Image (tube, rainbow, N blue to C red; front, side, top):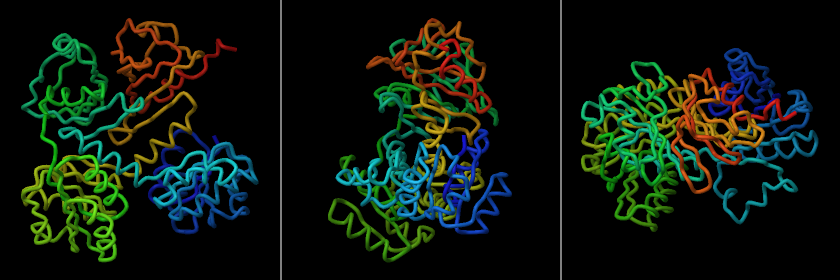
Length: 461
């Protein structure tokens, strides 16, 4: 697929890296010659220096032959205009724009993005998506990763198993027998740096990081079984009063009874904005100061905090302040990390959970780049695997076969099948029907195998 990506910043680089690795013909546009040079050299993609909303620059990038335009520059207006030009002048089939300003995203203005207006097929708001993920993890204490699928009927829980896990050294088949009414499947294990597909006789071991796919209303029970039952956070300290931090605080106040939020922000104007927005709403105290200042954290009563959320746009501040918060008594910590180098430091520094904002954006785009059978793709284990929600089309090769007869690749583990309101634990006897949604895990080198299972069968022709 020929794809134009506008913007070579962190988000754009993450998108280009993944799309080019999957064999797409990618060209990136940015006004910075240095950023274009870096991304072109690093990823071996074509780069064009120029303004992404100028028709001649888009034409130079080859937009006349492009099937998709992804506009993720730092300017919302540039992204929206680029999509409009791609539609009006070059008839590009799919147009995606990153929009950060929340004023554009209010429901009453939704028509702005319609085909007859700005012609944006998909609006991506990384700050909102990241904020939603933070809230999901806050709502499931004990899980290091939480991702919803199938209109939130299904959830994938990422859990680190410790020595106190009650079900260690128990075959997975025995767990199914012990909890026959629990619709849950362990679909992936990372053990000593290797990503494994679990089988019925495999046992869970201390140190494993696992992904369990289960019904959303069973999540708390699954965490209890795995020894990760924790009380909901009531005293929360947030570092960073940017778009993500304010959004998270607003949702916490609205959705969590009895919560008290302290917010720390180094930039005075941003702190004042947060105080104006959140002060009248509820129990929020905004402190002007650095999250790396022990006295500021002490003023936020960090020693009593159930949860510390490091949500600034600086990885170093996030990770080091999380370490400081832990040393001062915070029970749990969560951090945003935007680079793989920073992510590698999170666990050694004692951060309980971390989120890569770029991964959230990339996961949204992948479903559109790969084909119509995908409903969601979520990279895990530093891109060594993916949790996928796929729709079963009536022409797919997997239809009408029992799973044991469907030649499921060794690197793919099907977890749950969503059939209307029914959730079905996948077994060898499960027979997929058109319209089913399938939640599965695939190792990175088996992505194409998933496409073969769910795309249109050659027999159809």
